[in-house]
Amino acid sequence: MSNITGKNLDWFFNNWFFTNYYIDLSVKGVTKAAGGYTVAIKNVGGFVIPFDVKITYADGSGESIHQTPVVWEKNQKQIAIDIKTTKTIKSVTLDGGIFMDADESNNSWNR
Image (cartoon, rainbow, N blue to C red; front, side):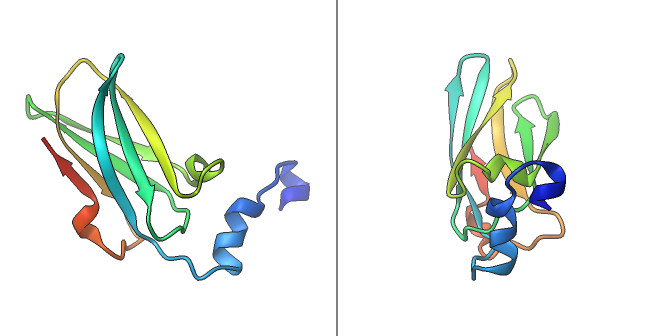
């Protein structure tokens, strides 16, 4: 696959075939940043998966921002996702879709 794409994809395929990593993401915190917020996410289980960041705003509106596995390419243990918004965030939830999380109790943050 790496030869065909011209990119080193070892970081991705290593998870699928050569580790005993498991799926477990955790929201470590949400902080105010320039132009919005930053969501700190820890990959507790180490397995790289796609996921959605589901955001609920104080005004009752919401949005979902899809993240592909490529967000884990440089650091498979933790990442920071920038949310550009002028609204106040009420809650953030990580949703793996068909990928079941080992511990869902740490997938949400509430103001």
